[in-house]
Length: 144
Image (cartoon, rainbow, N blue to C red; front, side):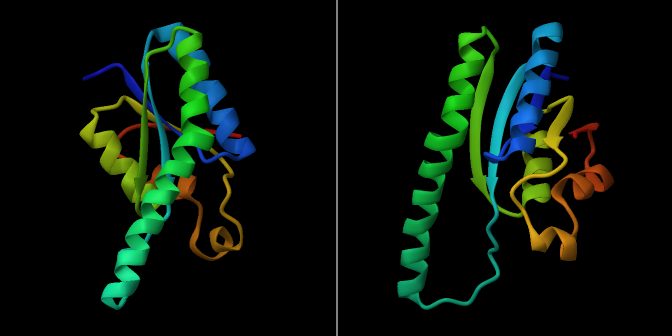
């Protein structure tokens, strides 16, 4: 098993606390951090070909924005402190996507903030952290 930790960030205060926690643990144990941002995206829509083309362009713009405004600054800070890290930005259902990435990269654990940028949807459908706790094949650290 690798010595990697997947840390989920989203630009929120909770994501920042999760990143700080993971950074401290990486310094202690020499773990590599996979700095991950999942852009919520559902494949279940019925669009015209024109709408699909527009949707593809919008996806690419969202990936670029998440990378440049959230993930790249985090990776830059970690590398400046001598921590091995890798940026990952993907679209998909957040908990499911994080689990797939954890399995693909053979991580030891997932670190996530208790509250991210969700909102009313969390009240209706549950939180990403809650879903991860129940379904993840690796330990999940939820940072308050």
